[in-house]
Amino acid sequence: MKKRTLKQGENSVLFEQNEEDVAFVKFAGKEEDNKWFVCSADGTKIAETDSREIAFILARQNDFDPCSAH
Image (tube, rainbow, N blue to C red; front, top):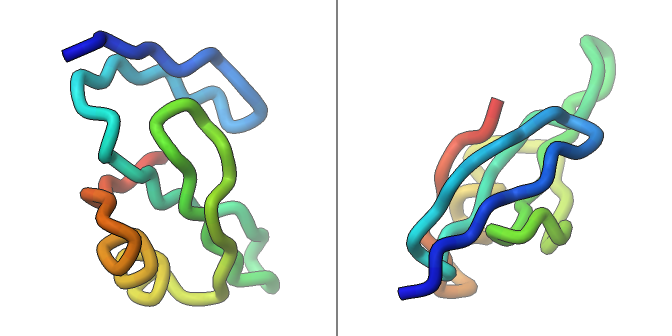
């Protein structure tokens, strides 16, 4: 498997990953705005929702293994 490294981006996430089927679920809102992103291992936004639980479900429905990113 190819080793991948996310570039340090807007959310300062730096992560080495050996699996390409991982999706990261990360909070992208503010206190009054409950927004969650599902992103691929290279940082590409796949989905946006207002529920963390739904974000994990969306990742699994699209054959990704969801992982929390802080």
